[in-house]
Each structure stands twice: as C-alpha cells, then as structure tokens.
Image (cartoon, rainbow, N blue to C red):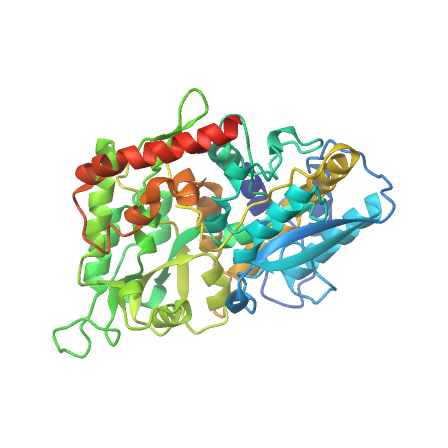
Length: 496
C-alpha cells in the first residue's frame, strides 16, 4: 500500500518552526526581531500569509444564521482530559493556544457566512442509534457526525453517511484533508469518513515513543534524534537499548513495577510496531475493494520481531499488570521506571507539566532500508468526520462550504498551535522533538482492519504479543475464510 505523506502537517510545521525556535527572553519582541536576512518578524509573517493556499469557495455568503451542528462521541471518564473534543467548539477566548485557535476560526467562519457552529456530545455507545434514528426519520438535525472509530465500523456499511468524494466545495486534494485517510478509507469508490485539519483529536491518537533523556545519557546511548533522521532507528536498536537500560533495582531477581524497565508498553505495542514497519493487514485491489493482504514474508518477519520484543523481561505490558489504568501506566514512566514509553501523542500534553525530561521519537523501522517511519492512528481514542445522508441540496452545499472554510483556516492556525503547545514542557521546547512530530504525524497509517475488524482478526492480531503467538502463517489460514467473508459483506453493502 502506498502511504501518502501529509503535506498539510509539513506545511504547518514550517509555520510552527519560528515559534519553537524563538527566544526564551520575554523582553524579545516578535514584531521587531530581525531574521537572518535582516527582515522583521512581522514582514516574514506577512509573506507567510500571502503564501497560504486559498480554498476554492466564495469568500462570503449569507445563510441567515443557520446552525451547523456537530455530533461528537464522548466517554465520561475522558471528558476532563485532552481526549475530550476540544477542536470543534470553544465558548470564549481563554489564552490557551488550541482553544483560542478554535474560537477565532469559528468566529471567522461564522461572520463570513452568517452561520452558527454548535457542538453536541453524546456517549459513544449511543451515537449509532441516534444517527440511525435520524437517518430513518429523514431528520437533518445533525450536519456533521464523529463516531469513535472503534464503533464506526458498524455504522459505515449501513449507508448512514454521504460519500465525501461527492460533497460540494470539499476539495480532498487540498492539504487540509488528510490524503492518507482518503487513500486508505475509500472503498468501492466511496469515502464515508476523513481526517482533517479541523481536528487535533486524531493527531493526539497517533502513536509514538517517548524516551527518558536522563537514562539515555546515563547509558551513553547515541543521539536518538540523529539516529531517526539518519534512518537507523529500528526494532533491533529499540530492543538493544531497552535491554541495556533495564535494571532490577531492588535486586530480588524479578522485574516488577519497582524496577526500571527498558520499554513500558501494553497490548497496543503489537499494532503500533507492526504498522510502524509500513505494513497493513488489509489493502485495496485494482477494483477498489479491500483484500486481506497480511502474510507476506516481510509481514511475518515484522510480526515475529514485535512478538519477540514483547516477551522479554525488560518489556512491561501494563495490560497484564495489577493496575491497567492509563494514568498509572503513564506515571510509571514519569516517575522514572522506564527508558522508552509507548504512547499516543495525547500523552505529550499530559506529561508536559511533569518532572520527567523526555524526548519524542517515532516507532522504529523494521530495517534501515525501509523508506520512512510510519505511525498508526488508534481506533480507540478518535473519530473521523462524516456527513449524514439526510443532508442534501442547498444544505449540503452549505455544510461543504463551511467545512472547507474551517479546514483551510485550521491548517494554518490550529495545527501549528497544536504542535507548539505540545512541545512546551517544563524543561524546554525541545526543537528536535518538533522534527520528530513532523515525521510521526506526516506518515500516518489508517489500517481498514483496525476500523472494521473483519472476522475479528484485528482483535486476534492485537493479542499476538500478549500470547507470544509466532504461528502466524497457520493463524492467517485458519481465519482467512472469516476475514474474506466479512470483507465481501462490506463490499456488498457498499455496492448497494
């Protein structure tokens, strides 16, 4: 499968770089600071404004104060965290970068088109029935819907949503629409959902690794940032360094949470590291239909490497521990119990005010010759944008225009604010991690298997590491008929 780099994020990072490299002196004025060419910062920003791509939409329109209502999944326990929706609606300016970028974006769009952007949150288990009820009744209350990806698999085949390839004004060739998600999630010529610069939640759901800088220095590890940039960061190196750093500190001969692990992770590491080798469990054939493609020699080699890693004494699987809570797991890393820490990027925000001095790097390659680093998007903590099929005619044009406007503004304002605020740690802005985030977010994988869970194989695969399963070929063959049947069922529903 070809994985398209997200040009949108690369451009956004370029916009963010002047912020990450600025003086820490509060007296330094951004309006007068000279650039290398002798220009002022204000002149440079003006030039950047001129280079912004413009969406192919009317600059103004009057929709009479019509409401554009977004329906977004929620989980009560996550509402106080950054996993809650924070990228669609903001009630007021607060001084927090992401909130204010969202607020200013919405005000700009609302004033340009005389609309009102509104948000309704709903328990994730209720979204399916609510959308089904609305679609069945022809109720166009919800203009845009975000089910969580884990539940969305049951919704996409039911015909709830419009084909985003055909929505007026939405130009999926523009950099504010995630090209990787368009490529991976288009099936039988239909695209039910897409990732977009309107949201940071899907960026937060992208996987990466954190490492303890103090431990890396104490064990004389090479510059991990340089290793990544040189293309030398591999699963073998992750294993080598993890084994070196592990320490049975209490000397009882058994590795426990009181000791220092080389790598703190969970069952999710199986998916994260496998997709990090650039492979997926499902691809598309020339007819645009999904096929169960897992099982090449390289796939099996990569799977074996990850399973082997996850069954070493220096690997801590928090899903097998007495306390599997995500917060407890993160605090193990923050309190110095591991060199490496598998995470979704939302943990960067969670840890930035803590005492741990950490860096950010992508999950490793399988071998140095691999073309680049790849990062999967977790189906457990994010949803993607969909439009219910109850929208049509003039209202669909209105929704398409508003979404295109929101996405274009977000691409240049919200995403740089997200990158910048993610880098603000207690210790430093860590410009090297900015380059790493560019790589992580710029090479993302949306594996259809993780969303649709064809024949329950996604769940089965996720437990390969936990179960020390190296019988990959026989597992594939014993499940192939179920997977193929589930894929065919989706194809039939899409054809209808």
